[in-house]
Length: 313
Image 1 (cartoon, rainbow, N blue to C red):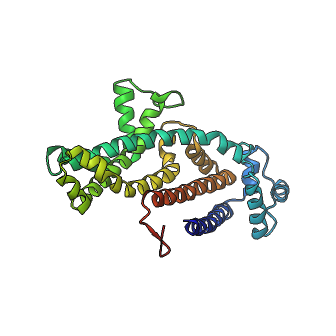
Image 2: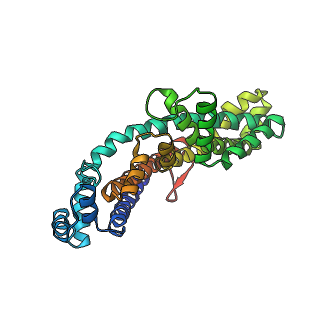
Image 3: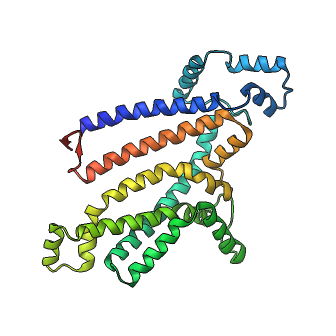
């Protein structure tokens, strides 16, 4: 286990360095002069003299390796630079907006787990019968809906026609209900499909047949015997979902006017605010690889039979 953690941490460090390079290059190769963009966003005339002075102030006249190391040193200290659009600290703005995205992620993950596991277990319990066929039909529909279609449909039905839910802004759980449903629908359908197939794969194994021979009920067989062994692939899927939700929340946060880091990235792209975009890429990349590492450790703890580097965990 210790050797595995060391290997994973080493690869994690390499990946983080690669993400930082990607984030820096993203700003370096983007069209337009950052000095000119900063002047325009600040309302200052973009004369050649002002542009030259701004380039010197931003350190853009230094070689790219020097700029990267200086930027990376600031990132290590928690300084992501200042936004061209607002002039405020990018790190501070990301820290202010991140709780909104995490709150949306928590609601979405809870919905995906509750509905995904429930539908998957129910579908496996009624294999090839009417409930199973209805659930598979519903799952296929959910998997085929893009996020923005789902958002528009929910807004039309629950906000415009029924008037039950607000369409935008922060507030109580009612404000997060439609965004969370939009973000979790496809994942809940994927979990349901994966749980069903994993449970059915366990039904023919010897330990399940032995438990069945002892006269246990159908519910006890599925929940107490098969489910703990079938849950491992779902844990890995949930980890990937939770890491990817930071990127997938861009559309949802924009459509429901939530001030999270996803909408911050959209604003940065529209205004060509490269420091903000670099900070967003670096933060989401760091969160994703950290969650992936945590999921790997959880999978090993759940199932010690997983072999790591040729040795048993």
